[in-house]
Length: 130
Image (cartoon, rainbow, N blue to C red; front, side, top):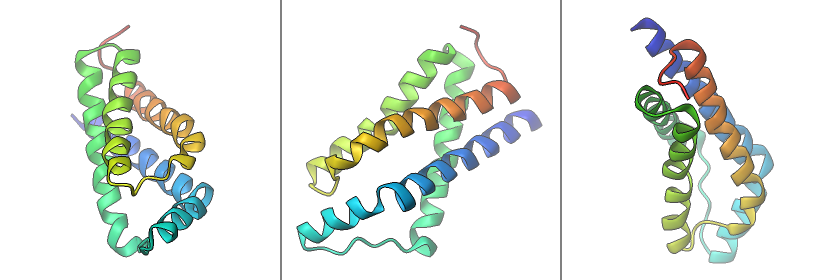
């Protein structure tokens, strides 16, 4: 039980760090420009959004942990990535608040994010093999 909790916590921290670094340092300018073009403010208050993104990160890590218990590693990675990212990006794009020009960074780094979280969980609390 402790190994499972530790695995989810460490994977959640990895996801949180990945999200923060990508969005704050790599593509923040693109978010700001996109929102400015829409005539709205991009609110990036870490005291407000930080806890919500951390919650999302730990829930996502928990979902990855659960998948790894029942389906093989690569299937878990692929399913988690689709559920965690494109299924978030599509409705955001539909609402016109998702800048497509961040995909050059978002796609490979989000894949790395999910792969890293699955690797952490797999090392600390191994699930289904394959």
